[in-house]
Length: 162
Ligand code: PNS
Picture 1 (cartoon, rainbow, N blue to C red):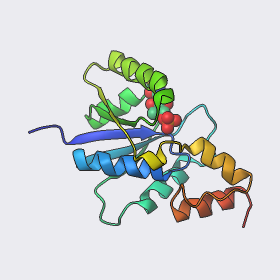
Picture 2 (tube, helix red, strand yellow):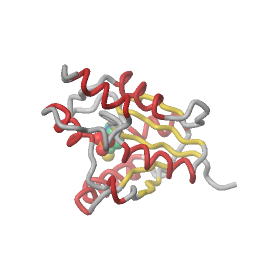
Picture 3 (cartoon, rainbow, N blue to C red):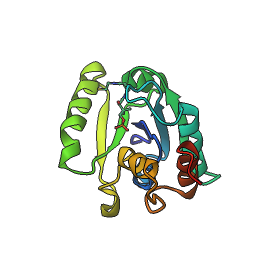
């Protein structure tokens, strides 16, 4: 029996269509997929971990088998708790590579059983990031092509735009 379980970790602040594309691709390979939201990230998230989790759950079909969890501390600790040692990361462009490579090797040094699998999102999402979506939304731009409808609404709510 091959590996069926994987963790897709991230900040997801907030979920974009690029993330959803990676979730779909990952789920096709690993039926038992955990989307893991890092709660204590140093970037100072716009949405609380609970809000980020709710936005992801709402984007998934009602009968989805994907689990959405929040974790604190090291990803390798969470992986051990879940006994799941495949980590999925989306790789959009060369600019992602250096950080992702560093993270994959550090994670494997901390937990030798851990393997990182990189998936490439659909081309139309390769320029997308939560950071840029937040900036466009904050300045009143239209983010509807980049995030699910309910995420657009949540962003409008945060930035006090109607
Ligand atoms: O969506 P992001 O911000 O690119 O995700 C980065 C994330 C959350 C996967 C990474 O920062 C992480 O794993 N954080 C948990 C703390 C940890 O394990 N840090 C060491 C990574 S080498």
